Amino acid sequence: MALIVLPSLAEMLKINFADSSFLVIFPAILGIFVASYYVGKTIPKIRKNVLVLAGLYLSGIAIVSLALFTLFGKHPYLIALPIFFILGTGMVLIFIPLQTLIQEYTPFNVRGRVFGALNTMINLGAVLPLLFTATLVDLFGLRFILLMTGAFIILLGVFAKKRRAMIIAVNSKAR
Image (cartoon, rainbow, N blue to C red; front, top):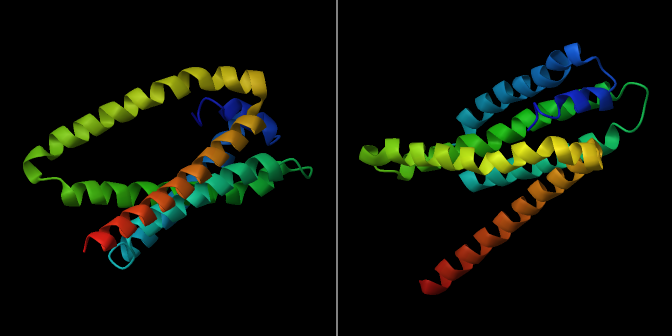
């Protein structure tokens, strides 16, 4: 979806579309590298759900911040650079612990089927957002879409945290 909105994002940040790969994608990749190193060192020490929740909150807040804070100033891309770094970091905090969990709890002889099914579900789940993203951006504007996406990701984090608390409560009562 990010590549679909990249022309609108470049316009919102007041940069040339040709420069968007450097000013948008490079900070996100840098955040991915830094967070990958951090997660690799801390994954044995910190619970994976803490990392995933931190990634959800970071990503949601960064997307909302991108929509709001780039309204100000002559050069909104200067505000957006650290936000893209945070988005790359948040993505890693979500995906590496989840992939690690799947690998830890999936029997070796069915891993290919599990990851094949997972990739198929991800691709099927991405079809509708990809089809409607450009239309929604044209109808409502990029800022509104970013605000709604960020709010949805934050709410997903809140739901995951409450769901985890309910599971812990049920498990402690069962003992």
